[in-house]
Image 1 (cartoon, rainbow, N blue to C red):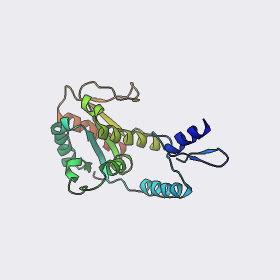
Image 2: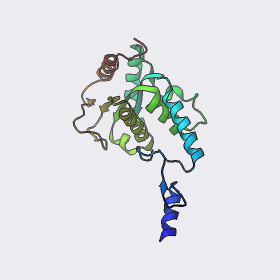
Image 3: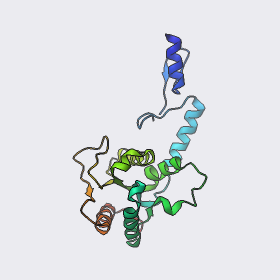
Image 4: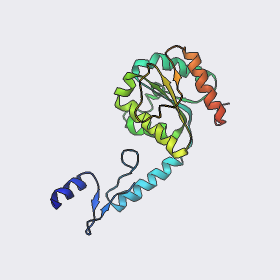
Length: 196
């Protein structure tokens, strides 16, 4: 039994010390960062500190399912014309070729954007990459203690672990220009827009 437990624990990246004390360093599933050795712990901490020092390159990052791309692209154009620096994945296709997109987008949505506008739909909830973008943005909320996620809902879909009392922009009955105006007002009210 003890050997089986040790296999299971080591298989999950948790180190068993000779005294049978489980060492677990840092975030797994949003709460515990996991490293196996002291060297990995040191490298992880170094990378985490470097990531947190990154400047905010974007006023807002747009997270959406491809099924809503036409709508979101129109919102992006309006926000850009109003002077916001917007992260919109198709604009960066050439820049990120042959790179780990999950890692790049995670850093952008968690550390390099001031706000994230999540365009929620049934399709959004079904895709791994959009949910990763949402989770990275949600962690930004936790890190800053401030609401940095702007929810735009297309069809009334409910996002997991989102407080049901959170206000969101209901995109079912408004046009792109109105959604963009809501996002613009939120970013400008924060006083943090780099492009005012």
